Amino acid sequence: MMQKKVSAVVFVLLMAAVTVCICSTSGNAQQNYDGPWKGNTSYNGEVELKVSGNNVTLFSISVKEVPVDMFDKTTGVKIGTAISNNTKYTCNAFNAPIVNSKFNYTPTPPDTENTIVGVFTSSRETEGTWKYKYEDLWGVVRVYPLITWSATRVGAATSAATRIAISPTQKTVNPGETFTVDIAVTPNQPITEIKLDLRVDPSLLTVNSVTKGGMFTDNFGSCNVDDTFTIFGFATGGAISTPGTFATVNLTADPKNAGTSALQILNVDVEGPEGEVISDVHEGNVTVRQPPVFNTGYGTYPSIAGTHTGTITPKQDMKVYELYTYSCPGTGGHSGSVRIWDDTEVVADRDGYTGDWRSIRFSPQFVLLAGRTYHYCIRTGSYPQIIHERSLTNEFGTINCTEFVDVNGRLYDDRIPAFRLEGEIMGVVG
Image: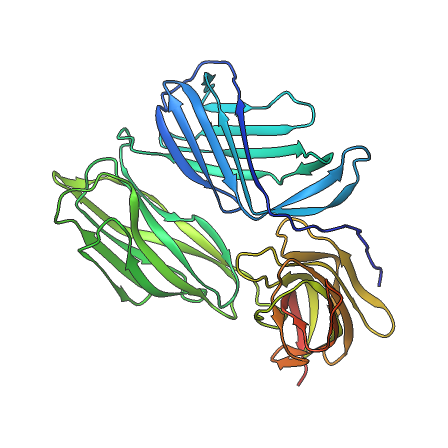
């Protein structure tokens, strides 16, 4: 089988960059979006806008745990990837008019690319992208991935309806994973009561519990019939006018099935002091990944980066797409390279990672056969999870530790890397 090698030096860097700029554009706004806007970004950050009259007067965006590619300024050669744990960019965009419901900003310095693009999709919603590149003090050019963001207008009363939305609107989870989503409410006028039904696909998701958010703290409840949860709350101390969380829903993904389940909001009833309030419903969806074809399960502390070698014997014929490394919470634990081979040929040899920095995607994909023993060499970085055993056997097969050499040169024979292989099952040993 052909092997593919991509060389990379992988660094893990904790960054806290704050940049301030003055920027401007020209044109005439078509609508008035006056007021503050707040929302979220990809890579676990926040975005904030301020519009005064027809002009954007502030744009602030932050991201966390972003894989930042690093390039040599002179040669243009990629020299590694850094993990930026906390990056914030603030742009005081004085007199930046909104043109045809859009705005953008691109700076002039040749060594910096900082492109902000936004569009107001309604009087209450806006979205866009942020592309960022800069040269650091050591002459290294750092390139961020394309960041997406979305925001809603804060405190505006011009909407014709109270907005009820699943947050986040889209989420991808692993089989068996437990997670939460919120039901967020943005009133367009004072409200006193909300009642609605939440429905999911029971073959993919199980609703474990529904807890109150910050809107109706004294009078809140839920009940379920079949696959539908009825959620209700009402205020006794006065009407509510500020946006907030109506309910937090705790769910668990099915451990065996994969697919996408809609998070449906049905039979909505919103009441105010003067009677029924019109609602604007925004549903969500959750995608459950394919179950892993091989999974060591989670590891434990203590953790340290290093190079793992050992053997793996699967119980199933499988085609492998990618390797995902379990990282210690709050760290950039990852695998920088992986090599898998048997006694006759190299099956997979891959350096580096892109996109989701905990994953290494294989191209071409490769096959591991049930009952056959393969050798592995996995080089990890930062603080990956480790299973402190010489051997582990589970429903996926057996994995053994031959040797682990940590970054300080210490040698162990009972350190198994915690990871899972994503792909598809081709057969099972009897």
